[in-house]
Image 1 (cartoon, rainbow, N blue to C red):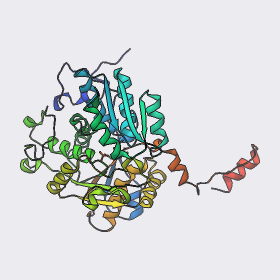
Image 2 (image 1 turned 30 degrees about the vertical axis):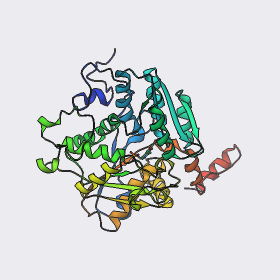
Image 3 (image 1 turned 135 degrees about the vertical axis):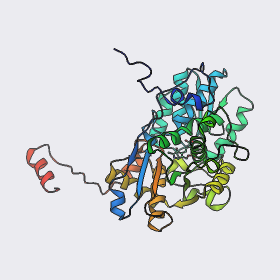
Image 4 (image 1 turned 120 degrees about the horizontal axis):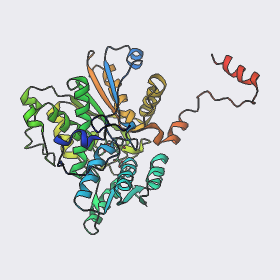
Length: 382
Ligand code: AN7
């Protein structure tokens, strides 16, 4: 017996059709993205001895293992609706994986530009497996982004990077889900920042979800911070302070402008010239949040801590959100009693190399296949 559509979750476009720029007849290209778990950390707050409530929004459980799927379902749905036969993106890995999957689903072509040797193995495997045409460039993400903009003016391809406004429209739904689950926005929402598309999308989502009900049905395409009337600040709805954390070697928002040679082990956020620079600057002023930076060591320590103490495995970039929050709780910038949501943007399985590299001290015994040696292995490690 099959389930009816009202029981079966069929993705975020179906779920939020009235709050997205689609019509009743738009054919959604979906893989069941969204509806990700909001997991309350149980052990880490106790370990740091602070009275705070921290949730992680585990976006690594999306169909291709990152939050990009929220934006990609919208971008590809609209590209197909408009008759496009090919999409293109520059990517540090996750966007290319997601674009490749949704293009496969739609039966169109995906071209992905990735920085040679600088994307995690799982993401490369995904782009290839889903059948994308991969262009490895001898350059970084920012070089790729520039080339994508130029080539889209000369070839019939739709850009699906977050400069495509439909991307942020899809990604804003993560904030809707959080408000629905908590009953209101949290006090703080922390994200890792690369292009600053996702932090912009979340702010947009929080503002829309705290707007009066009659203003929530939005089919606007572009986020217009200057003229946008969806302000929870004026309607009395609670809005979070947004916190954006960058990798220290790749932190243009901390430097006050583009970084020419961004470098970090968290390759997902190895981005020196953020495409949503102005949106992010504006929203930070409006929400009273802040940007900060973490060293690669801090990022990796937090990634391991989440896995070992909470059983949640995210990729390195994602851990920047929790790492930054823990530091700002310890130093008092975030007060005790606060409710905090951290987005874990991507799945830890994306980057097995970096994970194994930092687990050199993990207990791993090489033994004979005998009962006595297995038993010794257990009893000496109890
Ligand atoms: C895991 O895939 O830009 O600030 O090309 O993969 O919205 O850019 C990835 C970005 C955070 C930063 N965490 O989000 C790409 C790409 C993970 C990511 C970010 C990315 P934005």
